[in-house]
Structure formats: structure tokens, C-alpha cells
Image (tube, rainbow, N blue to C red; front, side, top):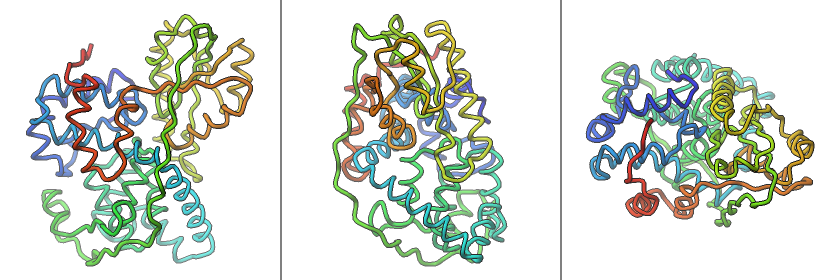
Length: 399
């Protein structure tokens, strides 16, 4: 389903565009084989070989904002989650601590370990859940509705810790990222919109799988909110920077943003081009091979596309970036802005090193993230203004 190139992403976008209006609004919740009713662009958008702005510009070149409202809102959900977490990075750290605690607990609790393994391996006896577990491991993708049902069954029917489920997704979803994945699982469990949970029901699953899993029995009838702390206070979003006019630049892209376009205007200043992937740090457990390979292949595609402008790319490990840059004679390390997660940790470490670090921030993120102060429904009120202010309704040349 997912050829790891920008060309394939653009082809997939072009194929989907005729369906981004009324078709998407009417059929987007149906999980059927082949996923014909949704774009399946998220693995590319997650790594930003195709950006949210790319998708929105192409969509609004073909449809009005009103007719494509549902699809446009779905694109902005990912933006909203990132902005929300940028202002509350402690939620990600709390999840990481909770995950490590639950992994340690499972090592000493045979019943939990068995139930966890059975859920991950699709051996629970709940046909739809087991199907989705296998589908996730086999393809790296699940329909969004299936993700909600799966998380609800994991938490409320199987009674498993939500952190272990979020990590299972993170290890196997091609589009898994700290914001969208973590906060979506929190939302199902009643931790994100405090006290509001999502309950999977047999009738809903039957309807939206078109009867493939009719008569699912044994699902929890109640979905009480998980205990948790109130949301932390918002903190300022750190700003991006600009490459000084006289700088010699060591440019490093990463798996949160494999696009080099933000540095194109300074191409003559780039003395070295590197790629540093932190895919292995998305989880304390081994990552799924599909996820690791997909990110690696996308990075290779980026290297090929950028070679004419920046020269050959050097694959880097995070601890080696500063030395590599110094050996090149660079005076600045530049990288795409890294949102909360492993790559942001690398950026923090680099800021403690010998060279100044410039994080190149997209105007799209700069404009959108500050509005993620509360729930999505407050955020979505700003979408028409953001579309106009960012020129997202001006069209995109897919060539």
C-alpha cells in the first residue's frame, strides 16, 4: 500500500482528490478492505515527505472549503494534536514513564504478560480485534475507526493498560507519532477530554464494517474514565530560527520532517547534508520492521531528491552530529523543527554542544499550533481564517 517515495505520495494524493468532498464526508467512517473511502496519506504526512499544507492546498484547489470540510478537518486534527502537545510536553514524558512502569509490571505479572501478548498477537478470541491486530502488524496501517474500536476494546474489554496499547500502535503504525498516537489513546480512555470515553459497541462495528464483524459479543458495556491528573498548564511553544546570512550550514533532516525545502534558500551555504533517524527511540521495545524500513526508505528517497542541491547525504547517529558538523567547518547546525518526541530530545542535546542550532519552523506550524489551547472544536473555528491567512486556498501544482 505504501511505496516509500514522495512521488508515490503525490500519486496517492492525486488519486484521492476527486473523493475528498462529498464522498469522504459520507463514507469516511466505513472500514472496508482496501480503505477506498479514506486517503491513506498519513504515513507520508507523518514523515512530512508530503506536508499538511501540500494536502490542503491540493484539496482546496479542487473543492470548496465547505464541500471538503470533513477531510480538511481531518488533516487539521494531526496539526491540532501536535500543537496541543507542544504546549504540554509533560504529557509525553508522563506517558513514557507510565509505559516503562507497565512494561516492568508485566515482567512480574504472568497474567498481565499473557493477556498483553495475546492482544498484540491477535489471540483474544474477539474476531474483529484479532483481525485488526494482524492487519496492523502485516500492513502498518489501520483505518481510524478501527483504531478507536481497537483502543476501546483494549482498555475496557480486555482491561489492559492503555500505555501498552499506545506503544503497540507506535511500534507498528507507519504513521505513529507522539502527539496523534498518545493523545488519541488518552482520548479513548477519558484522559484527554476529561471524563469522556469512547465505547466500542457491536452495533457500531457491524454497521461500519458492512457486516464483516456482525454479532461481536463480549464487549464491555461500560467505559468508565481512567483515573488521571488534570492537564498541565500550557507552556510557550519554542520559536523557530533563521539561518544567518554568513553561516556555514550543516543541514540535518530527521524522521519527523524529511523535507529539505526550508533550507533551499540557503543552499549555497550548506557545507554538508545529513540524515538522522530516531525511529528506534519511538518505543523502549523493538520497533516493527515495517516501520523502521519505511522510514529508512523514505530517508533514502529524500537523499536522492536532494542530492543535486546539497550533495550526497551522510547517515548520522545523534551523538555524532556535532563532531561531523565541526569536521565540515560548519558554524551552524540547521534542522527542521522537531516536535515533542525523540527528535526534539536530539535537538535539546545539540543545543548543549559546541555549535549553535537553528530549527527551521514551517509557517504552517507557526500559525496553527498556538490555537491548540483547548479542545478541537474550539480549534476548528479557526480553520477558515488559517486557510486564508496561509494561502491554502491558492492551489498546489502537483507536478
